[in-house]
Length: 312
Ligand code: NDP
Ligand code: OXD
Image (cartoon, rainbow, N blue to C red; front, side, top):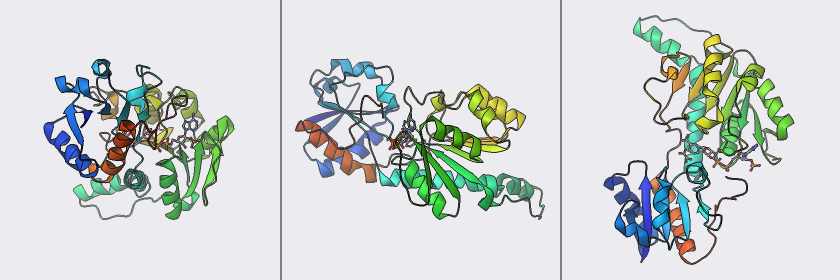
């Protein structure tokens, strides 16, 4: 029997049972136990989302950690996990498509002026509003990995002009692929719509700061589903208040849940989502997680094990 310690933000027993049922279908000899339970000290694998990592200290038999999401910053931040413990992430095409839908929705809401039409509907105004010519818009996607590459390709398929940025040089049909600091600067200055889908690492933290917002075109839109720590929130707020950034759509924040007194709530041209752009789906992710548990159990390095030197 493989004991797997489980924690997913404020875990309810229903959530744990859903995962347990799905995972046992692929790997019947595992047992999910709450990370905070006594039994967790016998765990060889931990399946985690935003867990209190100090609980891992009691697990002397631990062989590896699995993120319940595509990002691993919630595990690697703070450098608490020894280098010899593999950290595995989910890479699920369902999540990439889900993100693609959310980014497209965010862009269309801006360029088709959805909120303007909603307010007209409230006052029974039947009148066309200004529409942006989508052919003249350049979309910059920061991070064209498992998720960003799908988003970039889907946007291009929808007729948008898309440029993508990554650490290593990429070649993707129909996308202008850029890399390095020159590529980043080009994306900052050329794009009309900026979409952040980067992982959070020491090299990407605060990457969207005052200097970068100032260098964006006047009237640019900024969309963030990467992590809140990619953005200097005060500078984004200033840029939205001045109208230099005409619209922002955010799914992630430095503090989650977003505090009730955060000034973002009062800023009309910032649209807020509660970290739901691409949620982990037990139905589609269970097979690969069960396989990762099996691999760790058998001392095999699982697919999608994170490169600890890169941090993603
Ligand atoms: P990947 O690791 O597959 O892709 C990351 C991309 O970012 C790669 O293209 C990588 O470049 C690039 N990158 C990383 N560091 C740098 C850097 N320093 N400079 C330039 N480019 C860099 O990650 P995913 O696509 O799976 O996920 C990305 C992030 O999306 C997650 O880490 C998470 O933060 C966020 N996310 C948010 C969700 C939500 O609901 N809001 C849901 C799921 C994920 P290269 O290709 O060269 O390695
Ligand atoms: C993830 C997320 O990283 O949901 O999967 O943010």
